[in-house]
Length: 358
Ligand code: SAH
Ligand code: SF4
Image (cartoon, rainbow, N blue to C red; front, side, top):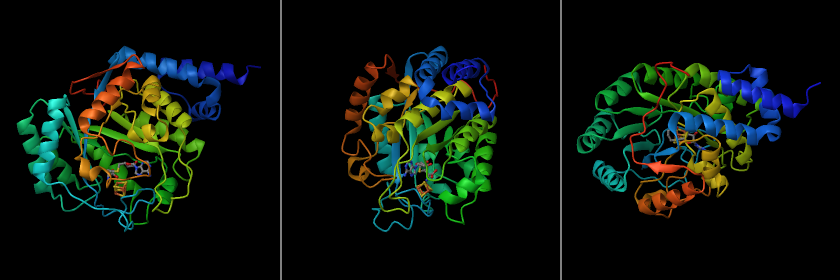
């Protein structure tokens, strides 16, 4: 009989060739991840190299509002967290972040915030239009949570190129354990599909090790991602925030997050895959290891220094004291050790909506 390590290797090869496995096969790999993680990372990195080379794309993250009307149980910005410090950046402040970012070589700006109704469609349109007008060679990515179809449409017309909306979990029962009853799994999924339909380069994603997540859930995530075929996929470890209902839960692990990055890369070879700040938070070498496991995007913080300590989704977030320029220098150094290099390029996806998997 074939031993487990041999079976893992075979399944990794199969995934690397065909870019899809059965749920049981994914599950077998996840359950036995320590037997084949190094081999998986090697295959995943090779696949990334084949499609994107050694280039690492950078996205300047602007955390423009810490107000949120939602109450996701895992998040430090949830409305019930009365200890959270709230702020909003004005249009001028946002534009000054993009100017600084442009000077530093950023050609993508990600505007992320809580679901804050203060940013009406008209206000967001104006922000997007003005960024695109000042920097026509840049891509604008929005990460504003769930909005109406009309709103997504207007923002697209205003010039937004991409949208990040993590689905958080592909399993409805699991979703309901992570969110209050008024939040609806179906609506989240509907938003994601709508964004794709409207022509956004769309990013889905989830937290690794979120409360109640099972290994079977993780296998299902891969099947869901294969079906959705997003341009981008943001995953990072769940990290507890002390002033939330999940404050005393365990964080997701480095090893499982890296393993999922590798599996995602082989499942969706062309996907844009960030090594997230959360990954860098649970381990000082997290982002470098993420790149070695197949990630090809970094999202350094471009928010003004005085608000960084207020945008706390989870505890112990890194880089809250650095200037944007420092972040870039630090990341460049970190990347040297991986053999990859940061490039200044819009870094569009090489796949996605067209369903042109290789
Ligand atoms: N409000 C928007 C964007 C900001 S939150 C939205 O929810 O889509 C961005 C992402 O941060 C979320 O999708 C979630 O996956 C992640 N996040 C929130 N709380 C977290 C935590 N405690 N640990 C790790 N990631 C978290
Ligand atoms: Fe708000 Fe996003 Fe945090 Fe949920 S995850 S509470 S929507 S900021």
